[in-house]
Length: 121
Image (cartoon, rainbow, N blue to C red; front, side, top):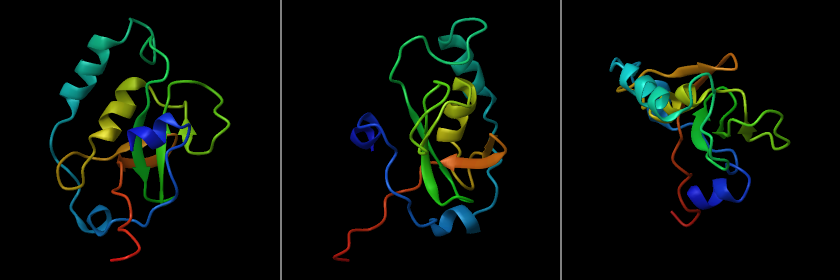
């Protein structure tokens, strides 16, 4: 996945994993992730000072992965600059039945969905 995100896109649309739709909403407290994000970002900044950092999540309503970049105005629809680092970090940890999903840009966002199985299976 890192190689795909580094290439400038988050990958092709994937089929919703059954776990995302069937698992109960996660109840773990993600506040520690927000504190971690706040500790590594500069005061008053929305994202890390280093460029090229992307956190990948999954939007089940759109059935696709999205890479949060912290940069405004992405030209690739699989990239989003609308999230803060804290939101993107919590979304990348939002595992169904463990951590709650995060709402970013008005859409529910989970951790990145697994890639589809190989075609030979």
